[in-house]
Length: 168
Image (cartoon, rainbow, N blue to C red; front, side):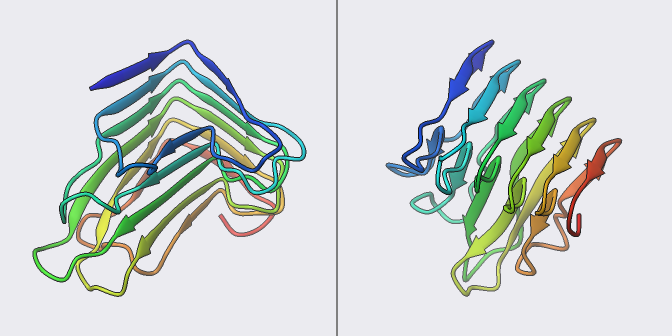
């Protein structure tokens, strides 16, 4: 278990993720509270947060929480990019990623938040929860959920404001 609180993360122009939860196998049980994430101009396609389940046992939840955080991307960067590995057996599962009381401003052509599957298997993940957030997207979408996401464990948005230059 790891908690970050009151930290200002600033990216580089090299196109790397500020927080890469998928480098040596995904990290689990991570909390960010009252943190700020800035991906500056010239950061070619670097995400603020990159989360993936590749390398985890099948159907394992991640348990990431973002509470009262601010995300600001300036060029070609996604605020939060989530990619999970689909499974060939079992049942759909909850990745347990919660974004609450946060502000996301994405002044890019990219989507603010992406949730997509990796692999061609039929057992899928869901469970991205967005609660009490303000999300403003430039020319991209506020939230892009792939067609390969679970319908039995849905991704949900509650009590949030989403403003997008494209589809939400």
